[in-house]
Image (cartoon, rainbow, N blue to C red; front, side):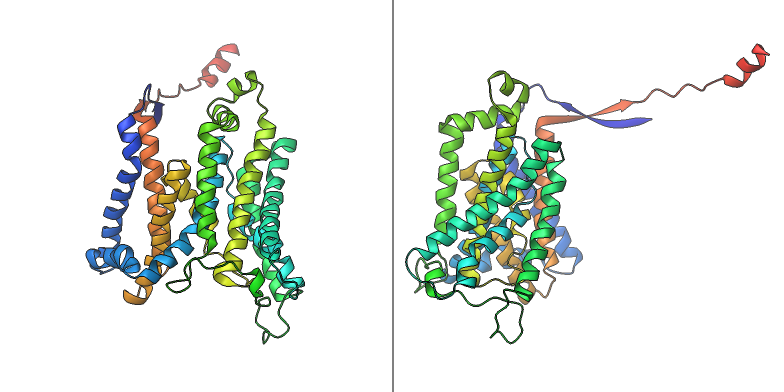
Length: 371
């Protein structure tokens, strides 16, 4: 019998490490062309609809910024987790919980207005996301539970809690029984960057600032060095005096805070109220963004724009080509598959290993000899 085995390469190729995202994107385009051809759609028409048509007007660039902002914010926080070898898969739940906590003021106190309202909402959203992310961090450090499972399961808790709120105690009494809260007052709405040309708001600025700050943290500060050491060699980190448990809380809560900021920015900017669904899956797509950007905050900005474009392209494809929105998610899934596949082959090589046949136990003759 033969089996496949991954063998770590003694030295990875610097060139292919740099080209990996581009190779993955090219493979995604090839696979996407095959997919569209099987659906009976001209691949050139499909790619034009996906990648060119959504950015031909100024207002469409604003829409791209709206889609990319939460992806960049969440992915920048996730990059810290992944670089420290901590797997936070529940950013979607932290996004939702940050939006809930940050919306307390405009929902429960709609008459409260003033310049302090919006900053307070943003801070509360960050705190909500950080506290929610601290739950899987506590479970991992206290009971050694798998953070992938706990953070993922908490996503559904947050989504169901939001659904209960907008259908129950937080439902707008004047909303004709629709499951939604009251519209946020003007003091609780994120200002638009250029109101005359589009809807893009300060959320995109928050994303760019967060990317720069996390880049400085990772490349210029001691904490970034600690993250890299513990991520690559926890044993070496312990010898250096770094605490893995403290790092778990730091990475989770920083990631959760940025996801919470993305949540409240989305609700107070693009949506303007809480609804049963406030995210098309930003928290999960941000995982693709983080790896496509090579876990580099500046690379994540470019990756976030690319993945944001797939959302706009998916919406355009539904109306122009008449295909399901699931095709856009398939496209994103293929991109993640090829990114991870390219990274794996850069760090490991595949080897065929033969298995020796299992010797048969000759127990019966021995028992007869004994008798």
